[in-house]
Amino acid sequence: MTDTTVGAAAPPLDSDGAGETRRRSPFGATPAERAQQGSGSGSRPAQARRRRRGLPAVLGLTPFAFYVVVFLAIPTIIAVGSGFVDADGRFTWANLTGLAEPAIFGSFVGAFFLSAVTAVVGAVGGAALCFAMLSSRPGGVTRSLVDSASSVLAQFGGVMLAFAFIATIGAQGLVTALLRNQFHINIYENGVWLYTVPGLILPYLYFQIPLMVITFMPALEGLKPQWLEANATLGGSRATYWFRVGIPVLLPSFLGSLLLLFANAFSSYATAAALVGQANNIVSLQIRQALISETVLGRANLAGAMSLGMLVVMVVVMLGYSALASRTARWQR
Image (tube, rainbow, N blue to C red; front, side, top):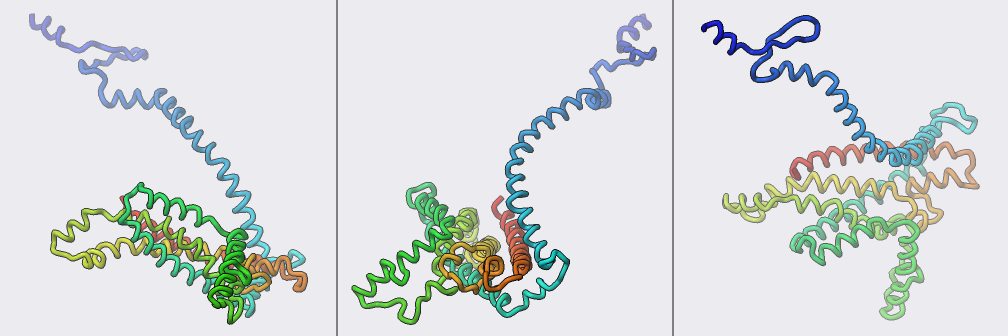
């Protein structure tokens, strides 16, 4: 009877096909056996399915990658590379030393001045508009109108913007003539300032302020109401909340938007080319002068050196913007 009981309780035997017999667990396959079974042919179909699922994503990025390579990477390499060769195709450092010439160095200073002023004024004006919009209902008519207008005006530049300002406040513009004839106010009494580099500040603000609204508004909306409630619970005033919580949280986002506005103004060309004309007081217009001038010949490769200078400035600004954006993202999670 003892033998019969032991035999009935014993787990069944299993043969592995190689002549060896092993005892099978009554609770099914062990974790080690399941892992061994999964590492076999079952994992290969899973890997193939993952590869098939990732293939559409790669194919979807192909047009964008083609656009970046053809219209951004290759022109950048050609433009920068031309700054290291002379007219005969020989390597030279002369183009880089040409950046120290007073006219070219002054064009960089003019571009820095224009970009810094419009970035600061645009950032302050855009931030004030964002604070004013906080009291409006998200998704309401007012907020939707401001968001839509900012999205459109931030992209409104170039020759169209220049023509709009010439027709409005140009030397013979509608507003200029109205002020002069009806109110005896001559806004150009001391010269036609619209067609100078300082005169570009007003047209540039036309798209800088909307761009600030687009980039800074999400940071303001990221302020949690619980922070204000916690400040009030601890006896803090509204000023305490802004100086201890609000401003420290928003400062990286504000500075990042400021750098973005600087880069946007520094790289702008069409509006300045249409308004300023033959004056070359900013670097983008100086590059045009080096490429198409009929009076100063043999300086085309100098345009590549100036492009390299602009590229270095943009890389530094974008690295700063990326660092500030990553710092801001911690508070928006």
